[in-house]
Length: 143
Length: 257
Image (cartoon, rainbow over the protein chains, first blue to last red):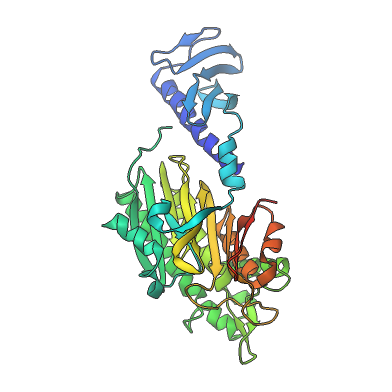
């Protein structure tokens, strides 16, 4: 779960940065009550009040699903960020992180046929390393 | 957020104090200055920690502590941290895991290796976490900490067959987490049940998957030390999954509790 939040904050930061960039290049945010489809179409402003302007980002599609955020800007600063739309579930993600259970291979495989990236095993010393599967994996990619 | 390209995996290998360290990188920084700086920072951190905790060198804090030459007030904060982790693990394992044990001669020895390896790799991996849009998979002598959130394609970790270390007995995907295995395959029977001072029986290897390598490593060692009780004990540990291979070749998968 923590990972999902982390990922989401990363995406959020990217969107916020995008909006922030636009804010700094256009002299001011659109005036009260206007709906501004900006030149590059990344954001829509509206619903502003004395407290500032609310800007809603367009829906960004990510591999996890659609993401959309809304930020309130006051005095040139972002005062709040709200998530309008976020991917549902992330079931595969949860599966992999929270409870990834090893899958037994039907017949024991060598590293190549198992298509693995790294080997976990009882402590390999530098002396034992040359005979290890990990060594084979490293060599295959270093060559 | 742009997805990292489906690029090839770049690999690096070095040996630090007798332990092979393997790194796989994928994404934005694989072979540039940032990647190489991060890799050197990993190696430097592992070397620095070894200089504090190695029990094979007489001048380290741990060696001096083991000989009773230092008092509690004299050792660094990270030694306190490691000893606190050890105390927690000792309680959780009913004493099977302990860093202070009697050796063959009956003298008490201080051996923090069971805590330090995973903990050190977790700390060293911080340099890799700072690489933006980059996936990493770091192995410290068979214990792995990995992140694949840049591409979203989980690293595939193979679990070595304790009866034939040239082969894989299981695989596990890791998107952001760690995998540690304890057993006797390479170094012989170096893990003992601290309650008896003898190597455990009935178990060939224990693999633990957890968010941190610190606890994956500690729990793999503790479960292995418990011998026949390994799978049952692991089943009650929150946030852990894993695989126990018995001395008879039997396999027990442990799902999240």
